[in-house]
Length: 529
Image (tube, rainbow, N blue to C red; front, side, top):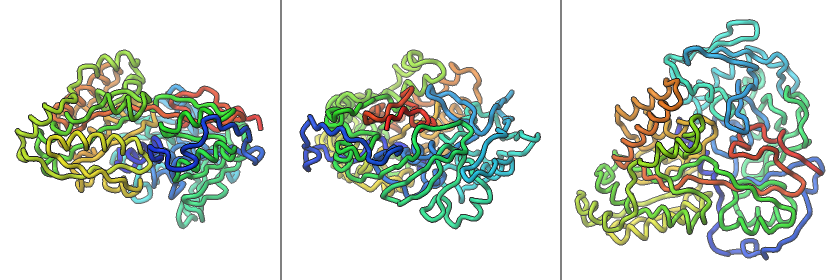
């Protein structure tokens, strides 16, 4: 899985808000009591923490891109509220060997301009998805050698070069396929831009887009899934969390996603607003690049890992809205097929460099830089919790002679450096969008991993897990790969996260789960305005 997708997906976990009262909004009275709803009848306004530069998720695979994509785009399959694969543009599918996948294409599907979806459109969209130039952020999902062809009047067959049990996730709009109209795409000078917009098969059609400001979608009336409750879905982009809080208080927005920890109580105190919190199946930790000195020294990596007080970070910075991580796969993600309890049992004994300053000092003394060194740890400005955690880690490392400069970066700049070798120490933040138990490990430990970690046994286990049909054995292989990587301290797990969403009194979600925004969620709202 590509660096751009995962880090950008995760980089919008929570959004920018300085962890002190720095403005009127941040220090607003806790009993703020606005009951006003969005002034636009029939419109659901969603306040997002950050912005989009394109509507084409294949070019920008941030987590909020995925939220937006679910109202307008579909793949062959979709994901339901429980994280299971369900029909979308394909009404049914089957595979006998996880290598040959046969899909029956929906005959009643239409694009938002009213034109019918054809087999040609589907095959064209798959070719776009496979093309690294047309889909730079997601083409890596499509292994070289994948072939797609029409094999019946309303049937296509996708053949993989080797079996992959998790390929079903690739052809979802949560993974790497967004079916579009061939004629529209080819006529667009810049597909997904404010000029050309986007054409999909979902319930809402893009009508306007202003990067860094807003995106507006109108009910298409062409969706095979039926009617939807709102006439318009408007996404407003907020670079400042205080402004978003004020907008929610005054009723200008109906939904605020990924609330920052320090504003939860203020959102909860707004009259009529309900805040719902769920695991988002996310991982946050440190990444070490063995190709960058002095992080090629395992004693340096372990010294830093031993300086991370995970429990204090979860308790004081996340305020309990998360769990101390023992591995890179959250238990509810790894356990999507075998159950959370079994996943927790498998990961309970993974090697973790526990917090111990004396041990950190001893490890550094054994390294090639026993007297310490200077380094930098960057974090995306849209995740303030990561910045606060970085400062806490830096303070601990200072005690053993490692001086860390903590630097906030705009999300686009931060993402562009991940996995490039420019930094030996950096964050990893990943929010899962599918129910694949190997989604995170598949990227963090696979051949194109952001740590540039090369270990044939680890990558062999990941490859084997992709082909394994027994869910328990598959989970065991994933954990075995994690164990080796963590023995080498390639990643230092910190927390598995939760996310909170605020809903106004006029908007109520049905079946709100950790997968809610990864489903066609706009069709799952009760709207009373």
